[in-house]
Amino acid sequence: MLFKDIEGKAEAKKRLVNQVARQRIPHAQLFLGREGAGALPMALAFASYILCENRQDEDACGQCNSCLKTHKFIHPDLHFSFPVVTAQNKKRSDTTSDDFLPLWRKALENNPYFSLGEWLVAMDADKSLPNINVKEINEIMQRLNMMSYESEYKILIMWLPEYLGVEGNRLLKLIEEPTDNTFLVLVAENQDMILQTILSRCQLTVIPAFESHEIASYLINHLSMGQDQAIQIANMADGNLSLALSIGNNEASDFSDMFISWLRVAFKSDPVEINAWINGVAELTKDDLKNFFEYGLHFLRQLMLSSLSDDIPLQLTSKEKEVAQKMTALIDMEKMEIMAGILNDAIDMVNRNINTRIMLFSDTLTIGEMLRNKT
Ligand SMILES: [Zn+2]
Image (cartoon, rainbow, N blue to C red; front, side, top):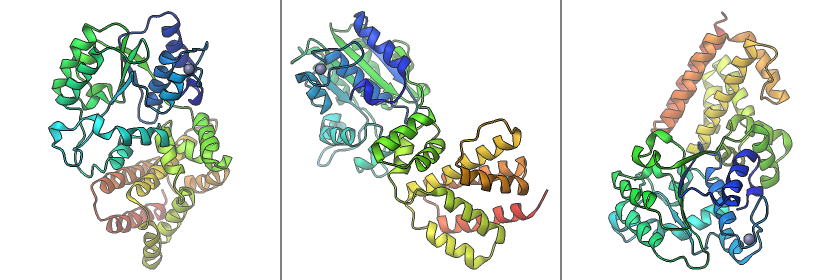
């Protein structure tokens, strides 16, 4: 991963490049970016830059021996640590990131913007909770205390230190008495979930969320998506590239048609039609069903914005704008709020594996009643 592979974020890249140029790389830093902001790819690009044997002004060369290895995530001086669940044929307390390293590399190769949810699916985690355990921490300490293999530097990228237990405090020794040329890059999404002791000793680098146009251009370049669809998905992903990719990778991703037909069916509230619509939707996977409701929320947010002022540029395609116009004639702000509440609850219910057919049926009737009751 190179800096140039990451859309936008010029300022964050510049700050990191400067750290290396001035030889002022903090021993421990925390890259903080919410899900889908690309904090992990940024850490990977940063590590590649530090390890590159032929560093350019703004990026790694991408061609030297070291770059070839960091590109495949197999550089012996670049270590990874991340939340895992129990490995096959092992006890949980004996399982470390190493047991999942081949899977980790494959996941990164596939899509470095993967979310924790997707990582759990890749590990086949089912319902077990991931963490970074004591054995892992002890191994990190050992590894970083050894000599480096090929480079003069050693780097540890720890993804989601939120999943360190209190034993994570053992890392403090490494942070406070660092060995020379050893750098820790913690990549986190949620500052509040990190051990305070660790957080306070790391230098913070905020990785901002992507702009909509950056996400759209990524979708166009990497998924060969048409511009209209890319913009629609980017708008709805609200800065989260992981979410945009998960929606974009799915065939049935024209949620706007689905949502519009839901409103139409709800308005009529004919039980036969409702059933037919639900039959179609029930085919969706759990993730897509959530994406569908997320789309509905995005649409409503835009609708609310449009009723506040005519001047706000809406993140909607022209087809969506037409529907939005018709809808503002039917429902007011208060009803939009209620509908957003219904969609939020629906996402929650899908997460809790509640019978979606029953839920969809009752939600459709509620929404229908609301649409017909003019204010
Ligand atoms: Zn290089």
